[in-house]
Image 1 (cartoon, rainbow, N blue to C red):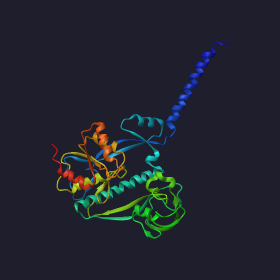
Image 2: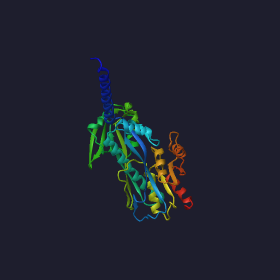
Image 3: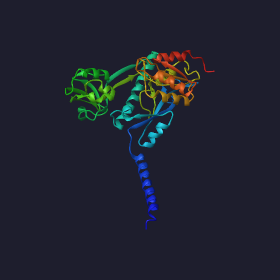
Image 4: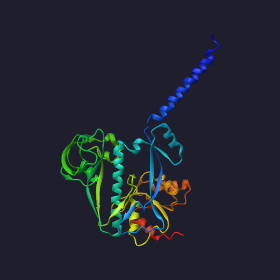
Length: 356
C-alpha cells in the first residue's frame, strides 16, 4: 500500500511546480512596472520635412534630426530586455513623466514640438536678417497636479494671461509673480479657454512635496501646474514643418539649420551627412537635451559625418561630455562639433571644405 506514494508525490510536486511557474510567467507578463526603456531612435533627413517659400531644396548632402525611442516596461520581460541591450537605458517612470497622466505627457510633448518650430523659424530668419516678429501670448497649462486647487478651475490647454491683473506673458513671469506668495493664499487668474477670456480665484498649494516636478516646484507656493510659454512667430514667409508624431523640443536647432540652408545662396551641406540636436530660443541660443548618447548611436547608424551637439556651458551641462564619450565608446568616425548658437553652427558649415 505504501509503494506508489513516492512516485505520486513526485508527480504531484512536478504538477505544483509547473503551476507555480505558469503563474509566475503570467504575472511577469501582466503586472505593470514603473519603468521605461530608452534606446536609440532614428536620424531623419530634414529636407522632406521642411519647405520654405522662396527657398531651395538642392542639397548634395543632408541635415538630419535625431530622436530617442521610449518603450514602457509594461512587464518584466520588457524590463529585462532593456537591461540586456547595450544601447538601451532603463529609467524610472518619475524620471520620464513626473506626476503626469499619459494624456498630459503627450500633450506636453506636442506643445514642446510646436514651440520648437516657432523658435526655429524666429532664430533662422533673425540670423538671416529677414523680417520676423515674435509675440508672447501667455502661459499655457500643460498639466495639473492631482492635488492642486487649480484642478477645479483650470484645464489643460488654458492660457493664463494675468495674475492679480498683472500681465503674464512667459513662464518665468508667472513663477516670479508667485515667488513671494505663501501656500493657502488666493490669486485671481485671467485665462483664455476656447477663445473666451474669464477670471477665477485659485488657492495656492504647497509645492515642497513636489520637488521632482522641476519648474512646477520652483517656488514654495504655486498653482500646481506645468507651465509653457506660448509664442507666435509672424513672418511674410510661408514655412511648413511636418513632423508627424515626433514630439519634444530637441529638434528645434536642426530645424533652424535647415531653414537657413533653404534660404542661403549656396548649399551648406557641401555633400556631408550632418546630424545634430538641441533646443533653440528665438535669439538662436542652443540648449541641452536628454538622451544624447542614444542620438549619437542613431546618427552613426545613418552614417553621419558630423554631429552638432549643445556645448557644455554651465557646470550642470553634460551633452558635450556624454556625446564625446559615447562616440568614443562605439568607435564612430563621426565628428562631434559642440556649438553654443545657431550662428556658431552656420559659421562652421561655411568653413567646411566640399566633401571629397
